[in-house]
Length: 279
Length: 90
Image (cartoon, rainbow over the protein chains, first blue to last red):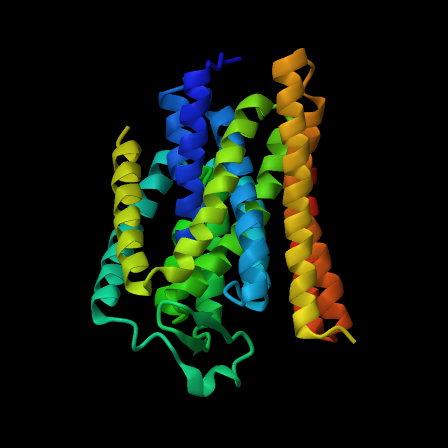
C-alpha cells in the first residue's frame, strides 16, 4: 500500500487533469502515460497500475461521451459495430495473445505505429478539404454529421472500408487487453485514415468505444483486488475535470492541429514501445 | 416509436448520471476515508458504478435500437453485451 501525502495527491489530480484533456481531445484513454507514471514514480506493481489506468480510461470515456453523443460528434452506430470486433479481440487476446511473448508483440506494434504517425502528419498538411463527403453521407449506413464550430459549418461524412476497420478494431482489442491500453491509439488513426472519418468525429467515437473494453478488463481487476481505491479516486477526479475542459477544446480546435498532435503522440508511444521491446 | 433525438438523449443521460452518481460516491468515500479513516466501501461502490456505466450504455443502445427497429445494430449491441459478460466470467 502506498502512502499519499498532500503534495503527491495534488500532483496526481493535476496529472489526471492533463490525461482527461488529452483523452477528450484525441480520443485516447491515456493509459500509455498513467501506467509508467504509477510504476516508475509511485513504485506501484504493474497489475495495480494497469487496473487504475483502466478505471481512468472508463471515466474519461463515459464523461466525454455523455456530451459528444448528444452533439452528434460520437457516431454510436459506427461505435457499436466496431465494438463487436474490439470486444471479441479483447476476449481472444486475453486467451491466445497472452501466450505470445509480450516483447515481440510490442516490437511489431511499435513498427506499425511509425507509418501511421507519418500518414497522419502528412494528411494534416493537406488540410481539411478532403475530410467531408457530404454527397454520399445520407446513403451510408454508418455515415454521420456534426456541427464544427472551428469551421462554423455542418460536416457530413460517409464511412469507407468498414470490413478493414473492423479487422483493425479486432486487432486493437487484442493488443489493448494485453498491453493495458484503451485502444484509441489504434482506433483513431484507423477511423481517420482508412474510413475517412473527420478527426473530431474519429476522436469522439474512439472515446465512446474505449470505455467498454476498459470497463470489461477493469471489472476483472476489481474482482481480483488490484484497484487501490484511494489512488484511483484521486486520478479519476482529475481525469473527469480535465475531460470536461477538453471537450470544449475539441470543439474549438482545428482538425489539422489535432492530427499533428496525435501523430506526435503516436511517435512517442511507438518509440517507448520499441525501447521496451528491447528490454 | 423512439426517435433519434430521444435515443441519443437517453444514451447521454445514462452516461451522465452514471458518472455523476459514481462521482458523488467516490467523493463521499474519499472524504469519509480522510476524516473518519473508514474502510473503502463507498469508494469501491463508486468505482464499481463507474465501471458499470459503459455496460448500462450498451444495454440502453440495445433497447433503443430494438425500439427503433434497427435490428442489425440491436444485434451488434447484444453481441458486445454478451462479450462483456464473457470477459467478466473468464
